[in-house]
Amino acid sequence: MAQPIFKVGNTDFTKYITKLQVSSNDIDASNSGRTKSGTMRRRRIATKMKLQVETRAMYHDQMVALQTAISPATISVTYIDPRYSTARTATFYGSTINFSEQTYVGNTVLWGQTTFSLIEV
Figure: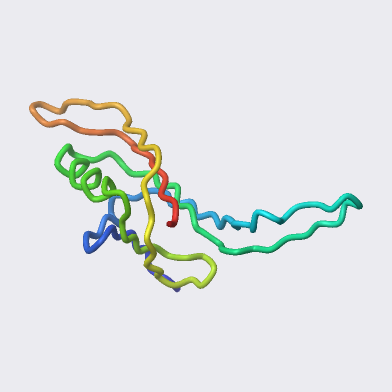
């Protein structure tokens, strides 16, 4: 059985992840589509993965570390690929990051659940 893993570069963020939704997306050639008779002509040129990530509440310094890790134009991410049930490392870019509410516990900043998407390059 595969163990949970979610790493960005060499930094392990597994303990902060509460949900990881993985989807496989086909990229078709520009000449794919239906003919006049309705027959589907399809030529898949690639399959790319999309990761939708949800975090638990985090202290401010933990959120800064995650935000810093996923901010570059492209990043290396290691996760469990359901197609193979093993860890896979691939290059992704970050999409929308939804930061949740910011709360205060004494002098400490705490961020609630945050979600973001990563799309394979």
